[in-house]
Length: 308
Image (cartoon, rainbow, N blue to C red):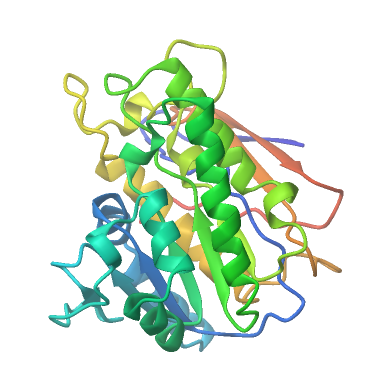
C-alpha cells in the first residue's frame, strides 16, 4: 500500500523507517517497567531522541505509568525514570554488549542477569555499531547461534518481554559492501518468523533498518544513511541528532506496542508478525511516498511525527 505525503517546500522532515512490530503477545498485559541496555548509540537515541519526555507525555495524556530505566557502560551504570544516574549499575560481564558479550550475559549465571530479570519486565538490549562489521558468513552464523541460545533463556521467562535489537549500521567510510550485506542479513533474520515464531515474549526492533540505507544495490547500500552521518568527511558511525530524533519516538512506540498499550488490530495475538513502513525519499522537501508491507492483510494504524 502506498501513501503520498506532501509538506511545504521549506519544511524539512526526518522520518524513521522500517519499524518491525511484534504482534501483541496473547499473554501481554500493561507491564510498565521498561529497561534498555545499551552503549553510546543507545544513549544518544534516549537523550537526543527525547525518549523520557515522550514517556512523560504519554503517561500524562493516557493515564499510564510507564517507567523507563536504562543502563549504559558499567562506568555510567543505571539511570532511573527521571534520567538520574544512580551511581551504581548491574556490572555487565566484561562491560561487553557485543553479540558474544550478550551471549555471556544471558546464558551464564551472573549477578547482572539476575538483577535485570528481578527488577524489570520489558527488557531491550543492543550491540553497538562495531558489531555490524561481520567479516564472514561463518561469523554471521556464530551470531545466529548465540542469539538462538539467548532466545532459549527467554523461553524460561514467559512472564517477561524481551526486545532484541539489530545492530546499528556502520558509516560508509568504516565498512564495506560485504560486511554491510551481512549486517542486513542478520537484522532480517532477527525479525523473521524463523527467529520469532513460537516465542510470544520475544520481539525485534530493527534499529539497523531505521538507520541504514536501503538494500538497493548502490555502493552505499546497508550503510549508515548519508543524512544521518555525524561527520561526512570522517568515519564516525554514531548517528547524528537528526537520526536520533527520528528513531527515539519510534522506539518508544514499540515499547508501548509490545506491552499491549495499543491495539494493533483484531486478532493479532500469538506469534509476532512483521510490519514495515518505508518513506522514499527521506528526508524530503515537498513530497515523499510511504510504502507499507505486512506478513498478512490486517487492520493497521500509521502515526507520523515531526521532530517535536
